[in-house]
Length: 332
Ligand code: ATP
Image (cartoon, rainbow, N blue to C red):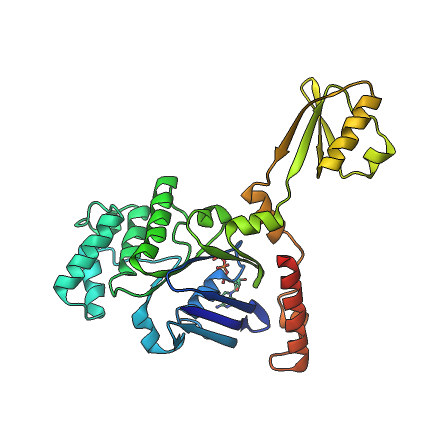
């Protein structure tokens, strides 16, 4: 449904997006995750036909993203979506339905259904007087008035309270059941964990990881073992070679190690010191650990001077390969 191939967007000599490739299948909920400035909004705006790529190809529902016809198939929710404050939710949404030439009866039914699913109250209240969460819900309903096949949502849940965040994310997930394809951005993996089929993680303009959230967690996070002992393990050479850290916790010592062989080495070192192991616990990496690990890695530069010569030059192409190699390495 969406194909992004070799996408690059530069502003002057600064690369907002470099060598981005991904495809979103029909009926999929796809997440683009990354910290501030990673290039998420730029990518979404290119998909929505609002920003022209410097290089690469983007198609949506078989149309080039720049083709005005494509917009009939698309609903876009910008990160900031100011509404007409003097209108009510209903009059505002009818206004947009009129812009898309949706017959009034069809529009009313569609708007009503969206607002019901979003559990929006106060539909006749002036939009200037409703909460931020309600405004976001109205903006989401606006993205649906033309019954698009593809929805592009930029940070739909950011800045909302936890209840509204959950409701917006659940709604985004449900869109899949109505046959829509959704691509949306988020600052953190938590927001996409239960919603997305697949994600790409972006950092500094590049895709640095991709796949299901579980797959990313498996590939990038390592289980560690915590060995609790009643004496401090003796500093044996075997232990010194290990990537082990010991801390005093109450009346015990906790040594954190990467694998079961290391657990055995700790066991021996503790026996040497005249003590014993009292507990062993494994610790799965949190999603936050995984995310920080992925986006915390050093990246190639973002200026065209760092990533290659100039556009279209051989050195720029070489630079692209370097950037791709770095990104590929980061995903492995
Ligand atoms: P955020 O989560 O903060 O919205 P983002 O991942 O959506 O970040 P983008 O908005 O795509 O990131 O921006 C990527 C980089 O490109 C940023 O460094 C931004 O300052 C830069 N950028 C975006 N638009 C422009 C522009 N029109 N002119 C110059 N630089 C831009």
